[in-house]
Image (cartoon, one colour):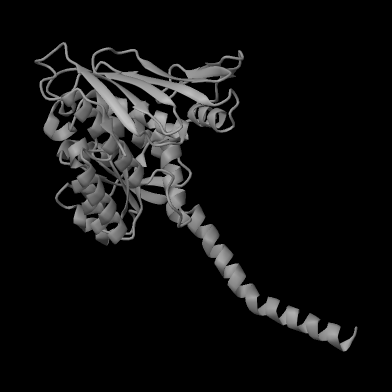
Length: 366
């Protein structure tokens, strides 16, 4: 070995020996962080939390149920008994600030009525917790911005629970558009309607819901048109219909709207709280079409294409998928796929839809 070669060998060997402990420590720390399940506090223990979110948490790879927030003592007792939640991890809406003292909780999943999202998100952020919030993000652009600002100031992530963005059926539809498998898209059709149920519930109270069918299930159709086209609409026109004035005195019963996108794509959408059974998404392109029907269920979505092929994937727990992705964003210190800004954009468009329905005029979004 020449003197020069020997020097290079000794230099490289010494550098490797010096760096080895740091590399080992760093990789070990990274593996430990990635393997740790993040603690989730569920804020609001209604039907969605009970029937979907809590069971989904048991299926996640990166999350665990670590706390609850509720204003109903009976619900707190039931969840404590079922999931073994410690007393110190049970909060009321007025004591959320105490989460700052609880290192077991990493993020809060806000599942309360729409008009309470800002209040509970801001409280969680001030307690130093990341926030994953059900859609719609809030009932106004101003409140959405307050949530975004609070999480940014606290250096915490804010995510919007858009579960369909984790559905392999929807992801396949996005791929078909992006790769122009059937050419450029021309028309998108989307609709989601349910029978909302008995009067008196919070969804029919404007003060808590902010709106009716559009805010609740119509947002799925609206979101789909945006992530399918990859564009933001520039013009919207809408029309509202009510057949039960007593039941839907405070919120919209049915709404249809049209949006135009910069590329020329036109979307026709509908939603209703009374005409249950509408659950579809369809894209017509230059050389064919594809659709999902049903499109927005928790599971069981499926579709077909104009070339005869089926769009069908194994069942996925979408709540588990979205929570795991948000947890990975926290662990990896990266932006979330569904930030608060995404939720704000939908609320802004929905406000324009309501304005168009109220005035009878198209509303510009640029």
